[in-house]
Amino acid sequence: MSRFWSPVVHRLSPYVPGEQPKRDDLVKLNTNENPYGPSPRVRAAIAAAMDRLWLYPDPHATGLRQAIADRYGVAFDEVFVGNGSDEVLAHTFQALLNHDAPLLFPDITYGFYPVYCALYGIRYEEVPLDAAMKIEIADYRRRCSAILLPNPNAPTGIALPRAAIEALLAEHPDQLVVVDEAYVDFGAESAVPLVARHDNLLIVQTLSKSRGLAGLRVGFAIGQRPLIEALERVKDSFNSFPLDCLALAGATAAIEDDAWFRETRDRIIANRDALAHGLRELGFEVLPSLANFVFARHPRRRAAELLAALRERGVLVRHFKKPRIEDFLRITVGTEEQCNRVIELMRGLN
Ligand SMILES: *Cc1c(COP(=O)(O)O)cnc(C)c1O
Image (cartoon, rainbow, N blue to C red; front, side, top):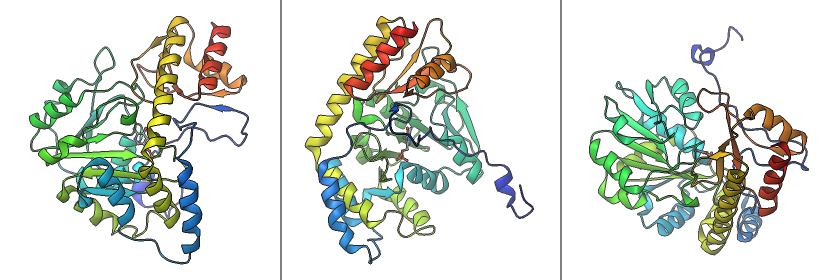
């Protein structure tokens, strides 16, 4: 604390990301990274971009936005890119979610949302998940300015079908609905096809998970032009160059290599289903995940205890000390070998 702090700084309780250990002999299943990494084309594209480091990058990120537009079947100016989807979300909170009526999001969800609300002074209300830990769209029929949902939700991994998102959009024609699709590529239905018909839909995605590029920091949003324009106005009032030339080159190559994307995604889906099955055989309750992690609860052992035991044996997973989910562990889907290691260790601890 210092007398020089702006008042808002006193009120912040910053987001704490999962541990990034210095040792590399740990099996790292705590931050939903993709063990297969990015397309090999990313390395070549970044190497080529090294020759242009003395130039400012393209402030409009033209090549990357066009690649995303082509891949997702939307117009170039319906795409916004940022330094990780966290930055895209931050600009969304500031540009589109700060109104008199509260913003709604689930009570159990991505921990960054209340952090942005505190940063920008945004009123919000948390809507409880139902007894099965699912988002129930009927529960969002209340006074609000906007609704924000991850789909699949984090850290439960449970997804809503596209039809439910469409129903939500239809029920709230005068409220913005933001869908955070950080994990959508692992089996859920994206709402991107709804963008053309709904001016109140903004979708946020990331290259950190399904494209194996958490270290490069690239995320994007897709929505109708006026929504994208709001994000551009905030971005251009903050930083003209949130993506450096290496990130632009690497991200474009990643988006263009759809074969690598599909192959690695399919492997993760197979590993996830095997991990969930193995844990269920040991008696765990495993929520039905369509993400690259599983959320699992042992019938008798405390999650904090299992977390510590796994850590001692070199495996990092994530635990949230929060009501209703404090007995769960969130385990990132790693390689087949890493998932087998988790199952073997859990068998030993059972
Ligand atoms: C990982 C994650 C993000 C942020 O990803 P970036 O690495 O900042 O692109 C956003 N939302 C959810 C729900 C996430 O799990």
